[in-house]
Length: 259
Image 1: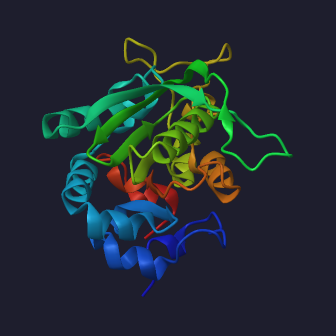
Image 2 (image 1 turned 180 degrees about the horizontal axis):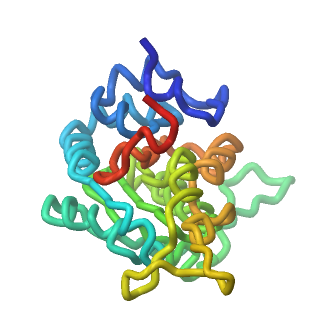
């Protein structure tokens, strides 16, 4: 029997946690419907230290369902798709959170010829040294962000925010939900829609495909994992869930050539 991660087409990096470890902490039905990656034992930390928050997240993932129309109609990360997580998480006290901080630098001088106590110069204060770091969902010491169809540079912002919150002692673990690469085969078939719901067509009358909307430079798993593999999240444990075709309610898996 294979686990969800063994069927991933993206190779698991040696710095990521093992499938066995993930399987001990993340529910089977979640692993069957989402690609799951864990770094710095994020799955274990969530399961053992923040079980209530993990229950919230897993329930939000179970409730999450999309249609081919949701995928094909106009709209990026502000579409109705990521908003589903707000419907599930906001009532459970997952709040958008921003931090700000000044850096105070103290300089101590000591004459090499003396053994007396060092003298302190006037402190230097760098105002707003930490500023503008925002995470969409924070509950207790757990952070979560959702990236559906933004520019892939958004991952740098997310991971830097996770890292900063973690280094400041605000969170212990972070979660990121994004598109699995397995959705690409859906985008290659599904016609793109206009705002009125009609099929968007090229000048020659052939349908435009959804892959034009979900390009290689947008937020999908391939763009995230190499950032995690190179440690852009710093010391912050990060758990990743990849949205797969299995959560598309009106999509037949036979369309992908799968049984």
